[in-house]
Image 1 (cartoon, rainbow, N blue to C red):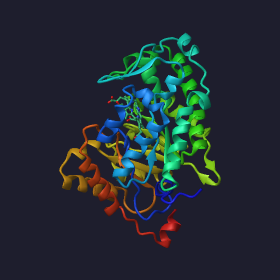
Image 2 (image 1 turned 90 degrees about the vertical axis):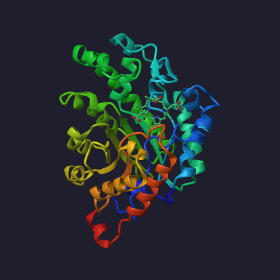
Image 3 (image 1 turned 180 degrees about the vertical axis):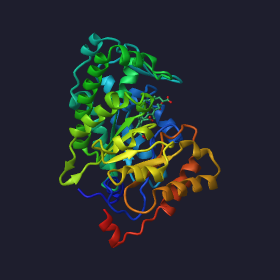
Image 4 (image 1 turned 30 degrees about the vertical axis):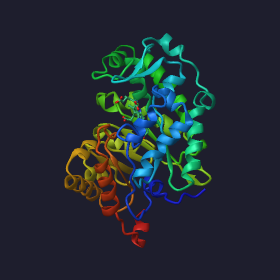
Length: 360
Ligand code: CP3
């Protein structure tokens, strides 16, 4: 089935587009008053995620406001540990809390085997409902957390500032952590393949906490498992390639390794300079990013200039998807989002010429 606006897919595959496409990390969520209103229907966040009609509605909300080039299925990276039998709750003001964290090999062995088609059927159903509503106008993005990032919550039992528990495990009993990461990688392959089969046109792996690893551990404990996942994903549906995007927050030291890891595109956080990133990846992958989400608290002209700087930083040629460098903040002024999207649409025009087709 062809998609009317497939700019994001084309850009992720480094094919020419008439203008730089844009979507926003966490584009559905608490900065939208209509989301906060919808959330009142089920105070419990996981119940919200598990109700496909609500997940569908939340997914569509930002699209009714802003002319974005993709939808992202409303869900969370912690659906996986939830399906593995972890006692997960989202406590207001505290974020996710897991009351039975992983601390031993026995804990890993006791994790429930996951049947994605049954245990995560609600995500499949949400994707189906969303795609009916999208009516092939724009692509839907599927996602999962990286094994390392999901493991941080499973081992720490909550969000952490120091990651001391999981790092202690990493240095003292790495075999436990590897066993957990392997379990997560296996489930994530099946989970993302289910999302692709259900209609996700591209998938993104969020490695929010990869950047807290030391230089010597990042490859072994995070990138290695993301790579294993990418190697086993369905990459072609009816002749249409399904791009895979890796996002490691604070990826700057490992950009070349990410570019060679088997993904189609790398998401950049705001600490990375776009122009040098483009040079460093040397055409091996597309780049997504990377406006500082807090720039949306600046005055309108400053926002517009920041958009121009990123577009100019990437420069001409295919392979750029505009995004924030991380999730949008819950207090973000809506006007600023409008301004940014406008600016990307205005300044992101790419002359589609025959030479450009050849550059691909
Ligand atoms: O982008 C989208 O619009 C899709 C929605 C989405 C959510 N979580 C919804 C959500 C996505 C892509 C995620 C991914 C996610 N979840 C990540 C990786 C991306 C990133 O931003 O780094 C992480 C680390 C999580 C784990 C998580 N989920 C945390 C730490 C929290 C608490 C945040 C807080 O400030 O309370 C969540 C909850 C969550 N996930 C919310 C939303 C909209 C807020 C919950 C609510 O509505 O009360």
